[in-house]
Amino acid sequence: MTQALAKGSIVAVIGAGAMGCGIAQVAAAAGHQVRLFDTRQDAAAKAVAEIGKTYGKLVEKGRMGATEADLARERLHAVGSLGDVAGASLVVEAIVENLDVKRKLFMELEEIVGDDCILATNTSSISVTAIAAPLRHPQRLVGMHFFNPVPLMALVEVISGLATDKGVADVVFATAESWGKHPAHAKSTPGFIVNRVARPYYAEALRLLSERAADPATLDAVMRDCGGFRMGPFELMDLIGHDVNFAVTQSVFNAYFGDPRFTPSIIQQELLNAGFLGRKAGRGFFHYGENAQKAEP
Ligand code: NAI
Image (cartoon, rainbow, N blue to C red):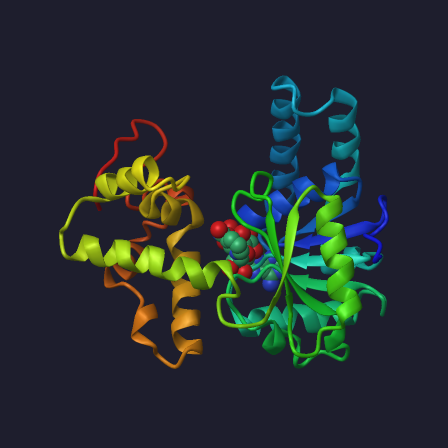
């Protein structure tokens, strides 16, 4: 049976946004030394402070031991340059959803990390095969696709591109299991499993909205309270972020040569144009923060 990465080995997380923070939190709690890097000044340091507070809340709720939380905090470090991830056994990339930017990062990383370091991308929808193509060792690149919010969502898709070594995918699978996750192997098809199946969920809801069938709060309530979904489509898009969600839809639409089933929504594009990116911006389909009242855009 393939072994997971050893506890204490270094896991580097690149990108301290919504996903990178969650991945760093889970990896440090699972016993790894974590190095968190972001190009935005202070983003990684702020994220480390926030994660420390989150561990504190978990202790208060009885979901983590106080010593366990202290040890996890000690293992978690923000780093100021990409060169500081040199000793990593695994790098998980969670930066902007853009093929060229991701390729550039991995090519830089190949100059920094050792030859046996596994390179993983958290991409939602970009071909893992394409991200790996320009690398010197494309066989060590694999998709490690977490879901939002990372600490709560059990599924991790382990995506093999055409060049990915089976042993590399197996180590990432075993490592995800050792972090308490439920991994599933998938091949690098557009949207992989979940984002392929989820596109029609968002698209149909957005079509209903454009036809003025009902408002977002009503549609969410129907799917949540009667359909058995944990979240309705509009609150879920707000949580994911409209920039990320729209980019994924565009990517799947383009990858299927413009198949109309995956046509991006003008309503969502308008939210993007306005900067109403969802929870992280304080406004999306709904309003958030102080005096939040649910309202249509
Ligand atoms: P985000 O926008 O919250 O965070 C991205 C972070 O990456 C930012 O802090 C940004 O400063 C940093 N960054 C950008 N370029 C960088 C570079 N070259 N080097 C280092 N840091 C850089 O984005 P989010 O939501 O965390 O998504 C990250 C990735 O995870 C994307 O590929 C996205 O498609 C994927 N993903 C997102 C999910 C979601 O629900 N938001 C779910 C699953 C995957």
